[in-house]
Image 1 (cartoon, rainbow, N blue to C red):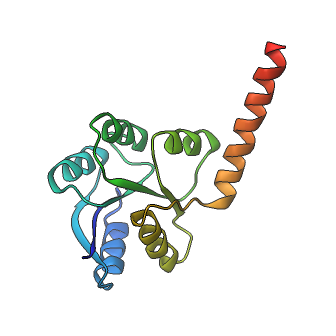
Image 2: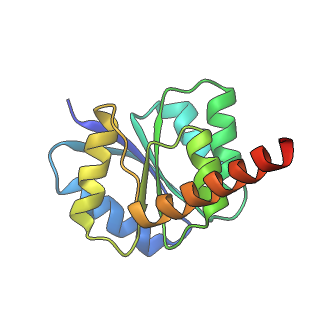
Length: 150
């Protein structure tokens, strides 16, 4: 059974490229394309995809708002963030909200396919550099909090 996807990015040419990438692979089925966060939420509610591929910066509901809604509504769709760049706070919050994969747009398309397959199978796929910086930030923050508490 193919992995059922909803694609969300505010750039139509990125959506075209994503759709083409996944439609050329037998293991994937694109259910919907969305240009903003609200469309992404509606598509997930309607189609109940296995995976939502979500651009981190879109008009309307931002990605964190979309993630909060998915979590609050207990929708089982797993999320892969697709982004040009991440900051540490966004990575930490996205992981707290249940994101299972993070892929930079500069990466090879094959890596996005592998990420989606791994996330669908129950694993995690996080871009190392951004996640390492985010974890460093978190550890520094926790060390500072422990120092203040003592």
